Length: 94
Image 1 (cartoon, rainbow, N blue to C red):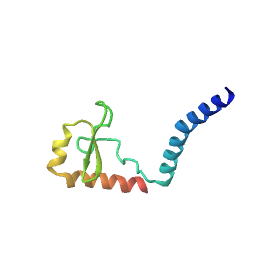
Image 2: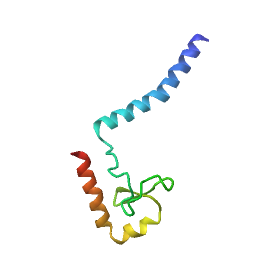
Image 3: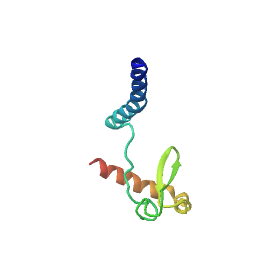
Image 4: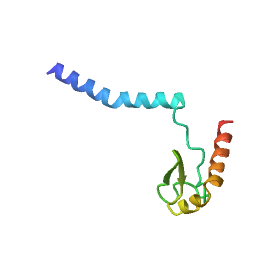
């Protein structure tokens, strides 16, 4: 019975702690850059104020909007909004 409890405890530890450790290593290594804006790239509204932000992937790049309605404006001129994202990313790295 003691061995059984030890196995269960080890399994729980591995199932919970090891994935968290891997996530922490990724964050330290900078593998996943933080999104540089706290506002919608189109409307300027604070992300999350209108519910969960709408996330769109444009040519492999994540873009976050305050709502799905902003996607239409983004698609009309993606270069304009991607420049805003690029500028915010450069400012965040400084």
